[in-house]
Length: 592
Image 1: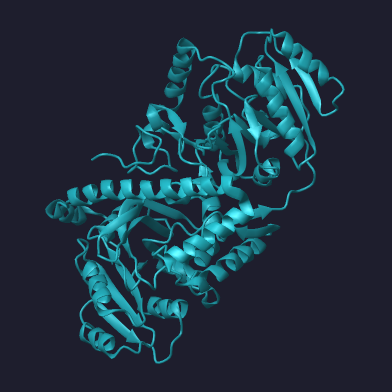
Image 2 (image 1 turned 30 degrees about the vertical axis):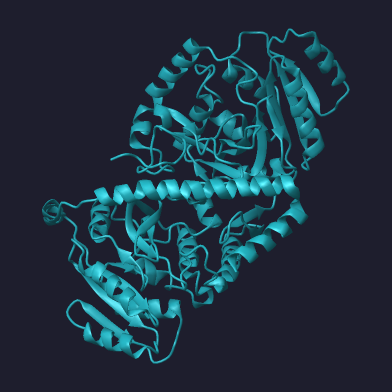
C-alpha cells in the first residue's frame, strides 16, 4: 500500500511541479533518510555510553536548598498495559523522590487497565476514575486539581521519563525559581523500544513556537500559573498544550529549557510521534485555529497558512503602511553578478516601494562603467562612489547616511532573488518593535544551503547553520523550515529598520571584512532586540566570487570580534543546543 501511495504522490508532484522539482524533492528525501540513519547510529552509541552516578546524584539532591514537591500528571484512556506499566515504572525509578503520581482515567473501557490502576492506587500514587469520557484537556485539568505539588509534570500515558528527569528539573529550579514553564530535549521510542530520533532543541523562541509546538516534552508547569490561566482549553483537545503555551506567552510567562534528553516519546499507531501515522489528524485542524486566535488576542493582523512540514504553520503578518526600503549593494567590478542581482530584483520583487543604492568601491573594468551608464535613467537606482580602500562596515555606514528610507536592506552584489515576495517576508517581521535584524535562506548555485542563520561559537567564532544541506531539507528538528530566533544573520541579505541601525551606530568599522554582521546582530540583541531567520525569503548567493579574502585582515577582524564577545561565545549560543558539535555545520552530535 505504501508503494502505491508513494507512486501516486510522485505522479501528482511531477504533473504539478515538473521533473526538475521532483528530483530536487527526491534528493531532499534521500538526504533526510541518510541524515536520520547517521544520527540514529551515532545516538545509539551515545545512549550506550549514558551512565548515571546515582550516589553522586543523591548527594547533590541532599545539598539542594530548594526541594519542591512535584506532581506527575498522567491522563489515561484505554492505554495498553505494557505501556502504562513502563510509564509508571519510569517515574518510580526517579532519583529525585519528592513527588506524587496523579493518574486520572478518562472512562476507559479496558477492564484489565482499570484493575491494574486500582491495584497501584496507594502510597504516592493516586488514581481517579471518570465515569464519563471528557477528553484530554478536562481529564488533565481534573488531575491537576487533585495535585498537591508546587509544579505539575505532564507525562503521556505511553511515554517514559529518563531516571534523572525530575532531578534535572529541580536542579534547574534551584537556579531559576521564577520560571513558569520548563521543557527539555527529547527522543523517541521505536516500536522495538529502542531510543532514536533525538531532538536537541534551541532555547525559547516565540517565532518558532508560532511555527510548531517544539516545546512539548518534558512539560513542567508551576501549579499556580496553570491555575491562573484556567488550565487547558477543551476547545483545542489534541493541541491543548500548544494553546496553553501561547496563552502563557501572552501573560508574559517565562520559559526555561534544559538541554538534556529527559523524555522518551513513544511511537505507536495512535501517537503523533510516529511520523508515518495518520493518527490525531483532528489535532492538525485545531492547530491553525489556535494560532489565529492567539494572534487576534495579540491584536496582530495576519493570515495563518500551512508550513513546510506537517504540523507546522506560517504566519503572514499584514504589512503596516508602505514603508520605503533602501537596498544597499556595495560592489567592485564583477559586473555579470551585479547585473544578475539587479535584474532579479526588478523582475521578481512584488514589493515596489524600494530604491537600489549601488556603492561603487573602486571598480576599474570598462564593462562595469558601460553597464552603470545603462542605469542612468532608472528612477529606482541611485549610485554612490566610495573611493577609499575596501571596508565593508564603512561602505555600508557611508551609504546609510545618504539615505532617508524607513528600512535598509543590505545585499551582496553576488546574490540573485528566487522568491517574488522576498521583501515582504522579511519586512512583515522587521516591522515589529521587538525585532532587530531579519535574514533569509541563502543557497549555493547547486541548491544546497549556504545560510540558514548564524551559530555563535561554531568553528570557534561563528558559522552558518545547516551549510551544505539540500535546499528542501527541513534540517535538525525542522529548524531550516522554521521562522525562528537566531543569534545573527548574514549581511549578504539583512533587513532592518533604519532607526534601529542608527541607534547602535551601524556596523563597527573596526571590522573591515569578517564578522561585522554578527557583531551588529549581537549588539542589537544586547539591547533587547531579537534577530530572526525566515526560510520564506530565498536567494542564491555566489559566495566569495566578488572579492578575494585577505588572511591578515580576517585574522585581525577575528581577534577583535573574539575579544568583544568572548564571554558570550563561552556561554554558548542560546539557539544552538549544547549537545551538538561546534566543529561542523551539519548538526551532528558532540562527542562525549
